[in-house]
Length: 216
Image (cartoon, rainbow, N blue to C red; front, side):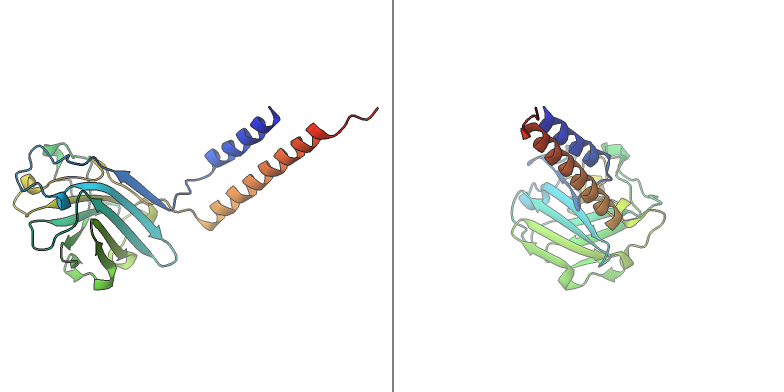
């Protein structure tokens, strides 16, 4: 029982602390093409996971995506990452059940590894393709805030085969939502370590008391 109490105390400290995840990830079912999608059902247009992280020291976002199959240049499709930096003025997908996909910036990445934000090309070193994995790095300077802190920016990914309409969008990740990176401030890490140390000390003290012989 004493050990359980010590573990419970530690758990309560962790729960009370701010979110400490270095990145956020969502998974997406394989083969879940949108019902209204009219393009080819290619594996590299079927998202299976999407992650977002933010490096506050380098001021760089990293967007990681996996697909149901290897990315094949020359086949139909490209990738759009919508970013809500605060204003979230663009909400075009309510008619297809994705009304919570809100953005004010768009990052476009082609299957050949080239990409752009607005009229600015992404550095070739920022985009990497390895089989079914697409990794895109984007500096904060290309995504200036319109109200949110960088760790609260909202991201969504949708592959599409053209800009002719929503029927050319194959998938969304996350579904009808956006994903933000939650990165702790140094003070948050210090608070958690202090709390964990205190809980560990309490646990050791209770264990010593449990094994100390009674004095007559």
